[in-house]
Structures are given as structure tokens and as C-alpha cells.
Length: 417
Image (cartoon, rainbow, N blue to C red; front, side, top):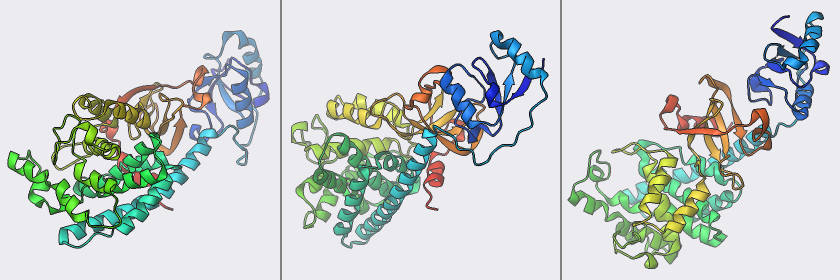
């Protein structure tokens, strides 16, 4: 009997091992390239999707050997693939399209905000006033989007450029603060104040000499004292702006204060640091340590959360840090992970109801070859949680693993067509 036989859907039964489809695997709803038909739902799905399949007689169950011998003795059926055939249960494909749509919608506001902060930083550098009304408008748009496109916005924060750290950082802190604030249940008005403070928190850095601000090596004690002036400088720039509330100004002035009163500029104890300022303080550190800067390379989101959790003892409110971990996920957005089937992908969305099963954008197949067309896999979907197709995250990888450029992937996926 031939090792591989071609079989039409009407002759398929449980126990058959499918080794090849009538189409590329990437154009099917089946993730594994080769699987055993071991339940009725999978059998019906194959029958509905495929015009024919190839069965491996050796890997199929031995109790259907007689049936396979009969099929093998028949002439190979001649079939034509129907290009109009509709794939059922394409929930991952639907989620893919929906996610990319949200990502591209968010990219427009993200780019507008980035353009604004670049101009605002340049205005401060040249001694001109800052258009805070425009800032309020953009933050309001971001606050609206974080209610529907939260995870897409957070993924966009990985569009980082080492040479534009301050501008990137301001936008990212704004988005991360809005996302965290939403998870904490803040109302729309609080979110707007929080996002505005995050967007403007580092304006004062533009009044720090470039040779200190962008020094590639370790700062001297004197240079660090100069860097620490940026929060007060930013406060002075903005304190007379009628568009800004005291909550926003406090964020600008006190985002480097720490729980045990060892921050700056006023060495405030935790009880004197407002909630919105504490939120910005935390995401400020999170974005800083995950970013490539002139003097260090960023660490993974997972390692960043682990470090911040350790630092909470002396720096941050521990309950807030635990809430941040719940918000960003056990596998934070932007994490590079390897699945237990060998595939590699980037976490692009977290599931509140299944924190260990986020949404993944697959980048490499089991053989570590790049997919020609990336697929989104939602591990929270029941189809990937049980039976022969059950998939788990095997391990978190370093950002450099397999030379995967996450920024380039986001650029390609979020590009407005």
C-alpha cells in the first residue's frame, strides 16, 4: 500500500492522518502542517474546507488499515480546487482583519501625536511657547481610542528610534498611562489629565545641554544633578498655561518622586504623590527600560515588569505595580515568544479572561522560516485550547532572537494603504 494516498472528503474518517492539503497550509484554518483527525468537529471542518487531502497510511490509526487499503486500490480521483470555496470558522482570520483595521486607525493618531511632540520639543529648544490646546485635542483622541483600540495603541509604542528617544518616550508614556488608567477604571476626564501629563512630562529636557542629555556614557554626579532639573524646568514652562490643570502640572513636576521620599525635586513621600502622578512615574520607567537609548539597549517587556516589581519595595506602590502587570499581561504586548509547536511570534494583545493565552502575530514557522504572510493566532480561542491542536506558549525570547525586527513588523502591519 502506498504510504500517501489522495482522499476525497466523503471518504474521510476519524483516525486518518492528514499530511498534505489541496492548498497551502497558510491558506487554511489549520495551524499544524500534519495532524490526526481525532474528533467529529475536526472531521467536519476538513470536509467543508478541502476538495481533497493526502493521507499518510503509516501515521493513521491501525484499526482503519483495511479501509485505507481499499482507498489505495482505487484510481486516484481527479479534482479541481474551487477558489471560491469559503472557509468556515475563520475566527482568527476575522480577528486578524479587525485588529489590523484598528492598528491602522490608531497609527493615524499616533503619527499626528508624534509630529506634535517633535514640534513642541523644538519650540521649547528655541524658546517659543508650546501649543497646549493642540496637545489636549490629541490626547482626547487617544483617550477615545484607548477605549476601543487599547492593545493596538500599546503595540505602536514599540515604534522606537534610539536617536529620537525623548519624543518617542513622551508619546509612549502618554499611551501607556492612558492604557493603565483605563485598566484602573479612571473616568474620561481623569484619563485626559493623565494622558496630557504623560505627553508633556519631559518638555523640560529640551533646556538641558545636548552633551549631557545625550551623553553615551555614565553621567557624573554633577551632570546627573543637571538632568534632575528637567522636571522643574518643564513645570516653569507650563505653569502659566490656562489650558493645563494642577493635576497635569503635578505630573510634570513630580514624576520622579518615589515612595520612600528619595525622588526629586521635592523628596515627597508616597502619601503626598497624587495617583495620576504615580501612574505616569511607573509607565515612565517601564518605557525607559524597554527602549534603546544612547547609553544602553532596552530589555524585554517581561523583564521590565519583573524589575519594576522588585523596585516597588522602595520606589512604587506595590498594588499599582500588580495592577500594571494585570493590565499589560503575563506576556506583555511586544513580547517575543516561542510556542510549544516551535513557531515564533509577537504578543499583540492580552486577554483579560485568559491571561496566559494572548493574541500572537506569527512570524516564524516550526522550522524558523519567515511566513510569507503573517497570521494572527488568538490562543484564547477554544480551537487552540484542547485536543490535538492545543497550543501553549513555550518560552519568552530575547528581542534579538532570530534577528526579528519588531519595529519593522509594526511598520509593515500598520502602514496605511
